Length: 118
Image (tube, rainbow, N blue to C red; front, side, top):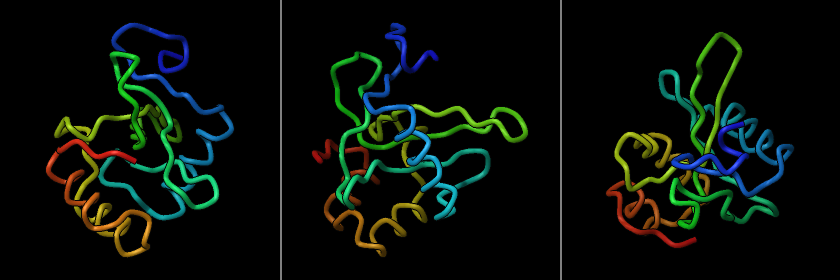
């Protein structure tokens, strides 16, 4: 609930819980997983859209990160790709490019932690 209740210092979802589940399911279906982490995007109608805000509660975010805390229990939140530990791995970014989800210029910006508008 930390990511839905306006907790200070925690990124916040701005999409409905059912949409958050869809974002998670998309990560699982596409196997956008590395170790105990998964990344995904909110894509209503196939277009990447913002899904939440960063810890400052104003910076808009479009990438979700899920951590596997326990067996069969995942914890997700909007993440800021500017922070290296929150950045999706290269193979996931490559798949987003290969599937035509994001163009090469945006993939490069995400990979290098640069500002990337959606």
